[in-house]
Image (cartoon, rainbow, N blue to C red; front, side, top):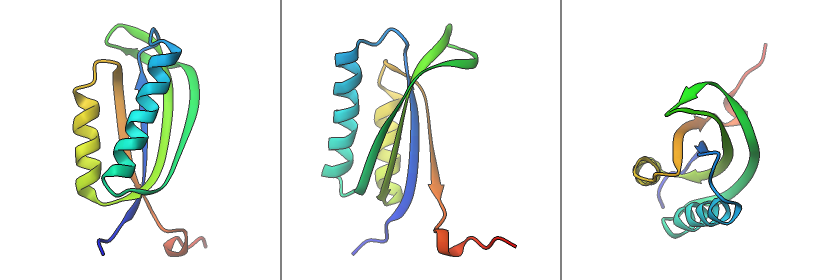
Length: 105
């Protein structure tokens, strides 16, 4: 069994992406994660938001957040796929810490 870490990926879609394209992209990435061995996949639509600065001449974007358990190879594969998708203007993946290992004093 491979060791799985908890990750959070947020990606920003172009604001002119249609609702059907948006839903198909979300289902595509969810399916990709599931096929490659990710577990506990949770997808949240964060909606259209104004960007702090313009990115590729866009002033707002559609935010989508995915939380899942996977290995580092899957994250690399996912990000490579996002890099070549013309509808995604930015993405970021962060590794979440286990709640048990965080000590609050």
